[in-house]
Length: 605
Ligand code: ATP
Image (tube, rainbow, N blue to C red; front, top):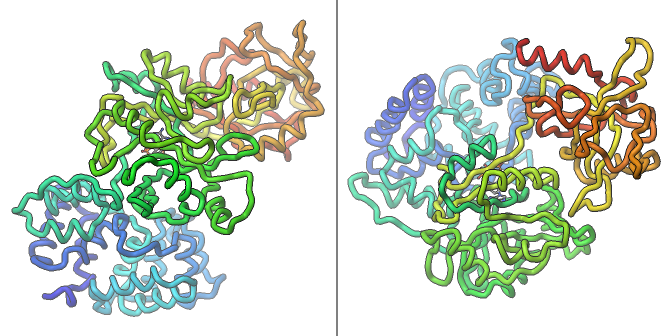
C-alpha cells in the first residue's frame, strides 16, 4: 500500500480498539502494529499528525470550537435550525437523545446524530484525502467555506469515521494514552527532539529509523521550545517539603500569556505555550525589543501582559489581543503591551538552559534593559522588584522558611493576583518538564455546593494597586429571630476581595460609597453588627446600615475553618466573590444557623 491508498478507516479501527483496551501497553502495541504493518518505511507524519492533532503545527488553526462546529454541521447536514437533531448538536453539553448520555462530549453527541443520517458504509476516504480536506478546512475563512468542506467529508465517510474526524478537528482524541507513550513507542528520542523543536514533521522525518539513536539536539533561536511547566501543589507546606534543602525563589504568578521571545537580529518571534507564533505582538513590542535587548540573538521566557499607564498597574487577564490590535491600528490608549521576562534560555550563540536559575537571572539582568511598563524583568533583585513603589508588595522573594512562602502567598492573593510559582534556584531549565522543579500554588475555589449569599457590612482599603480605595469587604451572616421579620443583627463572617473584575469592583464601590462610615477612633461598632475584639477583623469603613448594603455570592475552598477572628463560629478559607446580587434584597442573606447546618452536613455530622 502506498500513502495515497491507506484508508482513514484503518486508523479509526485502531482508535476504537485503543479506547476499549485497558492497559497502556496494549494501546502502544496497536500503534506499533500500525507503524510496522501499515506504514512501514512511509510518510509517518501523515498518520502521526492525526493521532497527535494538538501537536501539529503545519496547519493553522481551524477556528472551530464545539459551538462553531455544531453550527457548521447543522448546515452541512441540511438540518432545520429548530429540528431536534440541530438542537441536540447546539446543546451538546446537555447530552444526546439517550437521556443525557454523552453529555459534554461533542463528538459522541454528533455521532448519534450522524448515525441516523450516514449509515454504516464507509466512502473509502484515504488518509491523504483527509489531510488535504483538513488543510482546506483550515484555509477557509468563513462559515460557508468550512461547511462545504465538512459536507464533502460527510459524503465520503460513515458516522464512526466522522466522529473521529470531529475529534481530530477539536484536537482531543481521548484515547487514554499519553502523548509521551506515543512518542516513546515511535522512537526513544522522539519526545526530546519534539521538546526542543516543537516540530512534529521534523520528528517523524528525522527519526524514521528506530534502530538509530539521535544525537541530543539543543534549542535553537527561531524554533519554539516546549515550555517548562509548573506542578500544582495544594499548600505552602507541601511545596516547601518538595523543595526541601533547595535554594528557593518564590515569584508572583502573572496572569497573562506565556510567551517565548526569540530574537535573531531584527527577526523576532513570539511563541505561545502551544508553539504558535504571534506576530501581532510585534506592533507594540518590536522597537522596545530592538532597543532594550543588548545582544543580537537570544531567547527570553516570560509572560505577555497589559500595563495600564493611568493606574500604573497590570491590567487583568484577557485584553492582550485587543491591545495588540489597537497598537497595530495606531490607536491612542492608556494601555500597552508589557512583557515580563522571568527567564532566559539562549544568549549570543549558546543555549544557557543548563546553567542554574541564579546564573540565568544574572544573564537576564545583563541582557535586558528594563523599560517601565513595556519590558520588565523578574529576578529577586533588580527590575520590577527594585522599582516598586513604597508600600507595594514584592513580585518575588528568596524564601528561607515555609512562613516566608505563606506570607508571600497571602500577600499575592490579597493583591488579587493569581497565585505563586516556586522555583529551585539551582535548577536548569528543562523543555516540557512538569516534574516539580517549578511548583505553582493557587487558591482552590470549589463551590461549596451552592454559593453563599452574604451581606457586606464593612470595607478594607487596599494597598499597592488599590491603595486608598476599598478593595476588600467584611461580610456578615444574619441572626434571625423569627422567619418572618427582617433580621436586625449580623455577625461578621469573613473577609473577601478576589473574584470581581476591576470594573465590577468599581461599580460596587460607587454604589456603596455614600454609606461608608469611617471606623474612627474610638472604634464604635454600629449597633447592627456583632464582631469580636480581634483587631484583624476591624474594617476601615462600616456600612451605615444593613438595608443600604448589597449581597455578595461567595464561593470558597470547601474547607471551612473554626473562626477565631470573626464572630461567626466558622469562616471560609480563600473565599472568592462569584457575583454581586443586586437583584436580591439585603434581608434575604444567609443566616448563621443555616450556615452552621451546612457545615455540619458537609462534614457528615
Ligand atoms: P495555569 O492555567 O495555572 O496557568 P498552565 O498549565 O497554563 O497553568 P503551568 O506551567 O502549569 O501552566 O503554570 C505555570 C504558568 O504560569 C506558566 O505557563 C506561565 O504562563 C504562568 N506564569 C506566570 N508567572 C510565572 C512565573 N513567574 N514563572 C513561571 N510561570 C509563570
